[in-house]
Image (cartoon, rainbow, N blue to C red; front, side, top):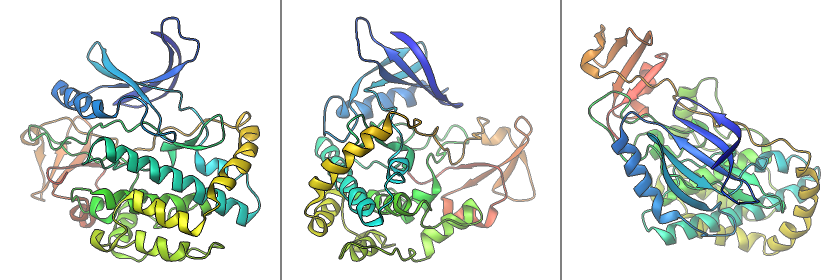
Length: 343
């Protein structure tokens, strides 16, 4: 493997442009590090069902392996600009709206295909930087790498560190409840809102206020030109998963009923996106929700006046031990967060 360029990195993972032996086309390799090798082994096992071509709108996982103590997942080239950045190039609001809806129909269909590969599939981290436009100008979903979603590790704090962007979580994820296919529907609705407006639907002054809004407040109204889409989004934003559109495949079908000429919009407008893409920057680096993971055991931390908060002398931050994000809300202001329950 020839390392061509490091694309992004944080404390737990690196993303590299690489070239295989004798390969003319470069691809991307994700390197994951964790002091719990069993966790990485579980990740490798959980990712294996999604190897190979699954859907035209889902990046292909070429394979997994090990580079020393790090897990490596190789995928095809996913360096395109984000879908949100591409949509901003379309100045006609009706044209932009129809093209964006067409892209979300295709992405939702891709998620349905992933579920066909593994019945219990839930993406969990549908966020703007995971949706990019490829060299043909079509929206693509980055490969579903099952990382840090295998359940709690009770031997240390940070066991269930939540990975992802709070603005695109479903209410059940914000509560620490196990996600289901309807959780991805809520996330798709949030991303559709963001791509069309440039704003997160539940944006607030602080992360905790945003999480509270996701759990408690109704979704903001979105002015749309396409009849029927607003009603679909209202159901996609339902707080109760049972009242929501049940899965991404169903969402794709309902949106297609509103935009039956979606394929034509996709084909014609994507040609213009191709011309713009050549000059466009690649997507932004991954935005982490909580990236200050304390690796100390709970019993090694110094007690404080609060039973569920201890202090870490190493990272000079407080560690909160609670059962869900909802329980963190009254304790927010703490800067080093962990929780021991939920999935």
